[in-house]
Image (cartoon, helix red, strand yellow):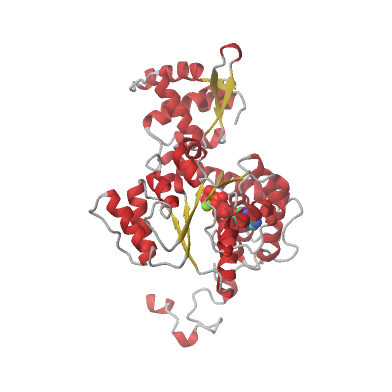
Length: 433
Ligand SMILES: Nc1ncnc2c1ncn2[C@@H]1O[C@H](COP(=O)(O)OP(=O)(O)OP(=O)(O)O)[C@@H](O)[C@H]1O
Ligand SMILES: [Mg+2]
């Protein structure tokens, strides 16, 4: 009877009341017999660390670039780049917060910071409208005017801000090659569009191609300082994790090898602090869910498999059929133990796979584009090799994701499962998985 399951408010504190179908709280499925986390929130994505000692040189560079603002002129424009999970966003947040504190305590600096992510803004026009919305604090973006009027509207809004304006644009690569705003904004005062404010722009990107492809005039305008966030090494990831673990976990619950292993796995991949923290968190959750008294190496290994699988699954959902063919070709070469393989070789494999599946066959150059895009998405490792005398270079591809998990997920697609099944048989016979 449902009414028996509903415990009245005044009885919720009574753990032994007969209305509780589990009798005591101890037998409630939500109660656990082990304690793993002391403060789980520390392992969440949005938790802000107070210290970033591994990034002290980068923080100092940021500080030097922002410091002119405290001296009554505009801060340098900045461009921060580096792979995902390298502390770019958290480093800027940290320094902006310190600068804001300085401004709050001092009469010399009147500061407005506009911090935004370009995320879905795929043109200068959209980004500009988005910035106007952020400054106004409203929910509606202006629209229906031409680009110059939109820029003028932004200058007008900036005119309502404090004397020193810093505009932080995270994930700036979203705007692609449509980058006029990045050229115009840092020069707005020089060009007389803004009179009273000093404006500087901080761009952040994890897309290295975007940086390389920026037009020279944008580079010239935006790049007073450029700061690279190189991938963390295993030692740095270890100290990052140690600081988190100290707060997040109950004393003594982590076996000695857990943090070094999480760090090593993340360092082998992209050196991402985000990935390392997720791994540690997942390992802790696995231990907790199984009522294990300690988090050990086995939990970490399992956590890695789970997260890796999730990453592949998420990425694969967005693959086009041609991406899948290209990926399958590299997987097949991996099983033939012929990777890293050149484009030509992958293309031969691709042709036989497309033939068998009766698919639409692309030319070699287009297949190479798909391979490169798979590289960008983290499925393949794509390295360039110089080919000596002629001075040319060529690509060599190999599978980056776990072979078994990749085949498993590709096999779920009814269009290609026959091919996948055969590959699984060969890989199993060769004991590759
Ligand atoms: N040196 C560090 N000390 C402590 N935590 C760190 C450090 N570096 C990064 N982190 C943490 O790692 C996670 C990822 O960092 P962040 O979001 O700054 O990366 P990012 O470089 O901006 O990545 P993306 O390019 O994907 O946006 C965050 O939870 C952040 O708090
Ligand atoms: Mg970021």
